[in-house]
Amino acid sequence: MFLLDTHILRKRSTIFAKLLIQSIPFLLFLVFLFPFALLTRKKSNPWVVNGHKGNYYEDNSKSLHEYITGRTSQKIVWISANHSIASTLRKRGHAVLMKHSFKSRFTIVNAPVLIYSHGEDDLDIFLYLLRSVLGTRIMVSHTLNHLKGPSKSRIRHLVTDFDYILATSEEEKRNITQLYPDKENRIVLGGGAHLDQFFREKVNKKTNTILYFPTHRETQDAREKLNSTVDKLILSDALKAWLENNQFKLVICRHVNSSKYQSIGEENLFINAPPDHLIKHILHCKLFISDYSGTLANFLVLGQPTIFFPFDLEDFLTRKVIYRDYDECRYGPRANSTDELIELITESNWYSDEFIQQNNRDKLSARYFPYSEAVYSAKSYEKIKTLVSTPPGKT
Image 1 (cartoon, one colour):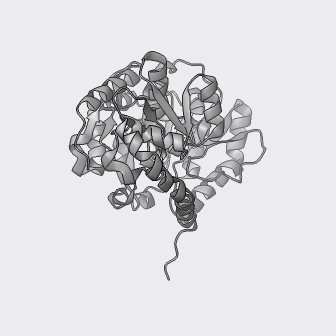
Image 2 (cartoon, rainbow, N blue to C red):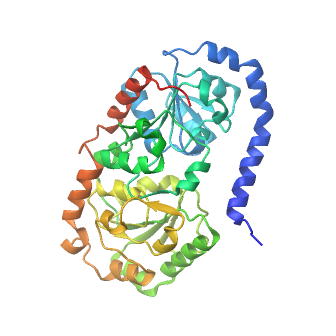
Image 3 (tube, rainbow, N blue to C red):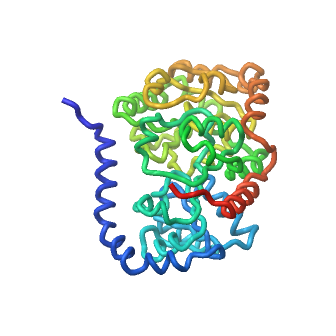
């Protein structure tokens, strides 16, 4: 008998509950406010932006919002599902509306430009129903698409669409085209706004921390294997001794879609970091460890030691797309087991030629980053303005 993964079941139940709860307010909006919002849309109206379904202020959406509000006269509204973030942004003088409110829905339909990182439901859970009448929809992604992507079967079932998606480089454009081959003409250069922070802060002082950031596992078996890997790291006497002797801490940061690692307790050598602390730890750690995350491309900018840890690569490839052979994307040593990882951490010279692999770094940087300075937000903004002046036909 086929049983649904409990995580997937909970996620679908949550989405269904949200749809049910929001259905009546949305219908009221359609009847009373939608026609007026649509009829009064014009190019001078505020743009709207959001990402991570409104729960976080991060990545390309954040960087674009900061650039537009700080460097241009363009009016823009952040749509938030997080009251704390909304309060913080309002204190800074930014226009913020709460997700699924009548005001946010009016502003979304009234806006000439919609910007989001993951999908239309970043802005509103019912936005896909209005695709044909909305302003120009710009998807900016939340990271760099240089290692992995969802399977094509999953792409077909995702509730998302866009008029344009911004790619950082020709390499990323090639990768995104593999996911959306029928929308190749809508994949345009001008992305990567969040890279500005990495270029600006690459010379920041580093702390005695090692950051391990595993990507989300979508099946119960894969999550259990990841949790077992984390447990083994925490229980390693060799790793504990090395951390203590060298006055380091191991930060394990969970993915936004993953649950908290329960085995990480109050012991001083380990830090259980939430998703919104990821960038802070990336910018300041002395060693970064990950598996398939797009942050591996971001970290390349910082020039710091990196370990690639795809301990479940064979299983991962049954569920995801790897754009190139995994080792083609490496610029650091590879560990295939927890024991190999611990050995690399505790017995290696992190700054040796073998560890740093400068030739690989140079080749990948040339492929990934068209500019070596913090100009990506400005390029994104200018590209969006150009796209809005020549919008495509709606699909």
